Image 1 (tube, protein in one colour):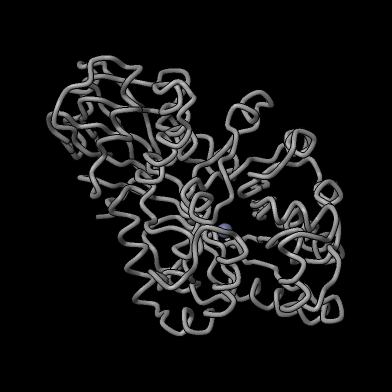
Image 2 (cartoon, rainbow, N blue to C red; image 1 turned 90 degrees about the vertical axis):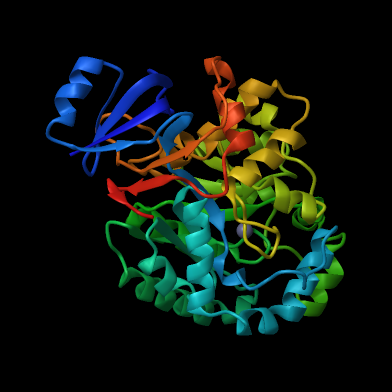
Length: 412
Ligand SMILES: [Zn+2]
């Protein structure tokens, strides 16, 4: 048994969000979070005691629900500012980018994410090049094996190659590695394959990840097979019309939840209503959306519909860092119309409790029975007002945590 003493514990548990001068008692799971000093003294006699010191904040480990580790080698090679310019540069340079990839490189990226406080990672895997790294990672990982392929004549080959990748990923399954499924997008996978992938994901009861309405160009292509996507699709994929429109695509999904729709920046009110009915969550990658010229997701519209959102970094192909606290800082400044302390609280929830709930994971909050995934860092000054704690934590969290526990084990 362990007793972790911290000045402030941000539990992310709605029943009691902040505990001052208390302790987290845990083994593999959290046993209790308490400020009962007598009880703490009693526990200390038979437990390993970790005293995080003055100014310490302990909270649940962060969950980055959407990244692409196979693009870990990308730095300055790609075009930014417009989605199509970016996509064209990815396709043009794909070979070179993937060639520079190695297990050591991905391991290094995962280590850096860990030091920054990310204890659970949802990684979209397009080729399977990241499998070993994900399986070896100290973090908990959800490997979203991605289905992509827009040539209807090659449907069968595309699906059987995808199933092979899923089978390979299944071999790594463990209590820290979830083998799951992703559908690339409504414009790159035919409806027949989308339906097959959804059925497969439902039978496996794992979370399902899908890119959806990232840009206005995507919306235009889905609605009228026109716009910026048209010359691109004609040239690269020999396609002259879209597979389906956005609402048809959403109608393929059942209402059993655990579906992560990534981006949704160009989704309209009806589509957001449909996502709400499906019980889906929206993955919000503000830096990626900014760099690809896609605009900013309306968090107010999600709040009105009680759709939860999860902030994530996306991959290094559309970001300069996979530091999740850094992404939260960007979100804080980009959503400038929203109340600052409340936004900060929502953002922190989006990478802990909301993310865990959306993916059906027993983590994301410090409460009895939840996995002991704990991070701890120190602030140089005091924050006496509870309502300002999330804001100060986001603004001032260091790039390296002082303590990290995953399932109760030290991960540093
Ligand atoms: Zn993505």
